[in-house]
Figure 1: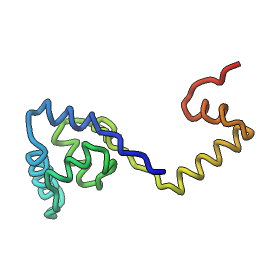
Figure 2: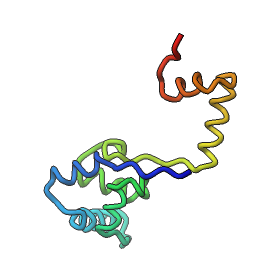
Figure 3: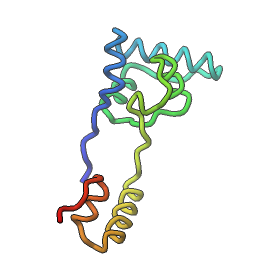
Figure 4: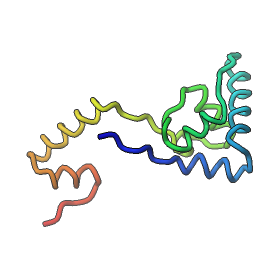
Length: 119
């Protein structure tokens, strides 16, 4: 079962603090990408909205650099960007965690969440 995307509040709060619209962010990111790479890339307010809604979590490298420059941050994580894993990756991680916990689901969940298991 697919989960709903998790909103990217970091990016949204940076945009709101700057007092600009999603379309204005897109225009500035496009300008920065063109200046950095010489390439004209298609980005619009709808794309920025998808980033803020968590539909897209890992923009391409040129976009990430432009967003970092625009908002004056050093790391992608400061803007709430992260690479999403594929379903296959998630299943492999789950199987590995279950194997390492000796098949105990509660121990596995404790390891994943970083919470020590109850005695």
